[in-house]
Length: 423
Image (tube, rainbow, N blue to C red):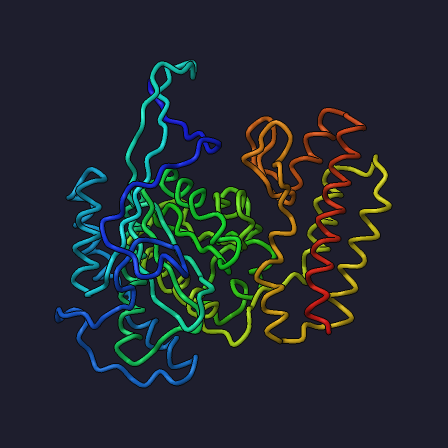
């Protein structure tokens, strides 16, 4: 048995991009010569579009685009293509038919092959190719929507429908307030390599990351971080009967490494993949549309204090939480007694708020994970309050004290950031 592992501590080496970049200086998102969507030339996207002056009009037009028939055609092409490289060509061809300029972000990463006992037996480099489409907004702040095309054909097909929906909106004269990036990643390795390379840009510009996870048909699950609760849970989000739960297994490097509010759409079970993929494309596209077009940054931390309470109760109460409780009550007071004042200053504060929970040096013994609210334990599980969970499991008083200190400091940083929204 042979497996692959990505060493996130080894920096990815960016190779020359296929297309010269026009946004490298400002966005540094991806090599792309002209990122604005153009009118598709084929009959598939030629339609008379209604005016899109209001958010309701835009949502209505977008909902009409992803269809089961279109998803099925694309999915059949990707399945027939077989291997990932052939599937990648199909994705590029589909984007070309929409006249969308596609950037190719290339990375060289280390690959370690192992035997059945996970003993390294071979190490060499692997070339990864991620495909990006940038829907250029009036602001450089960005909403990123991504999937992995190597093994997730349903997600790749659904994201192509999202791209087609945004193309239809562009034909009707729409340009988003914030930039939207659509990304087809070369597996988890490609996603991680791009996040590592673009970490500085992401920390300053990324509003949220929305992920299309595995699609197998059947019930839809949406995991979301606390800041995206209003966007995902609202009736207008198009989530229908989806099961909405806190972010857990859907967390990616966007969350763990750069502290970006995240959500993942996926389906587990049996059913018609085409129908499920269509529903997911509509739902995640509407969420991206809302985040990109909202007048002000729509991230909210109202439920965070309550969520932390629940996570602490699950770990037990056999430790001194006085300082942490005080910081948490300050947060609760900020959010309940003084509502957000929508201003550019508040927008900037909300854009960086999630980064308050990052540890500069990462979690002890596993520095790739940096987020104190959700991350990997020493046993490899993704759990809430990972540093504290490890210390409690080991009955380590010193570790518990350190973890509580880190969590308290993170809440204090968040309180200081959110105070800009109450002035």
